[in-house]
Length: 155
Length: 155
DNA sequence: ATAATAATAGTCAATATTAGTCAAAGTTGG
DNA sequence: CCAACTTTGACTAATATTGACTATTATTAT
Image (tube, rainbow over all chains, first blue to last red; front, side, top):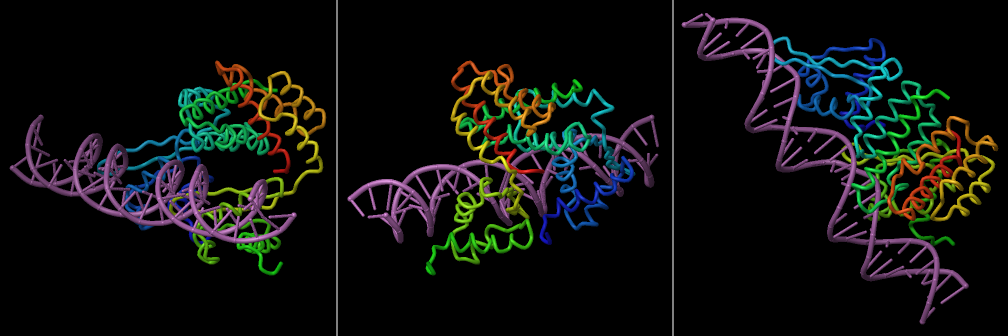
């Protein structure tokens, strides 16, 4: 609505540019000024919304002429990315990160919306319902890895 | 009848908005203040009156700019079949019985082949990987029930 | 060349801003 | 009176915002 948080707005802005051009290069301080936030908030936005789980790769450089580059990666072309994701999941994953990964799979058309929603339902917090959060995250990790591996094989 | 409790009044208010717009986004604290109740009462109202059985899906976010969204969804016709299956599953189910249920869902065209395979992958014995078989069957039951509930409405 | 300075971006922890959970206490209809 | 439902609030969890401090790279002065 009208009072969304500024991080979401910055995210949306950056993604609108990325929808056109696959890759962008920004100056942290400029974006910060444009949206009237402290520069480190840009790092927050990137760290929470432009990770490899989200299907983005980020690189940067400090010093004069410094920049932050954000590029969209594609899970279909790049089988490495699936492996990377499985690696990254390891033996534990939270609902939030899992959601990011499922969303990326949907965006890259590896899952339909219905498939994505079904998979999300299986690993929801209330579904797993463990008192011990470590166990919950461990089971979720196994489920998600299982799904990713299932996607390697075409039906 | 005119002196209903406040939960009913809040329910009616929210549903009157939903009658117009299919989906609303509220700020918990604002609604609580508007009706002069503690914020957690909003959770109570949602939990008791905006369930999936009633055709509502709820999502929320905490933190700055947080919200609660309630959407009205279109329930499919065979909800009573789903109810029966959920009843049948109870709190525990083996891989074999789960497979049977998923196969019947496929035959009834509630799941495609790929969807069925994905769901099976999530509740496979090696995926869940519990030493304690009772726990394994309990988790599988929760996962399968969650899937069935997700099938109550279209995307 | 080297050192000093300027111009970037990164990290991290404190604080703020929401919503969720749970159980105790209160209320009500049968 | 009892069981079910409602109300309340203390505690918890998730997410966002801010700023002080750090790290890296480029440019300028010596």
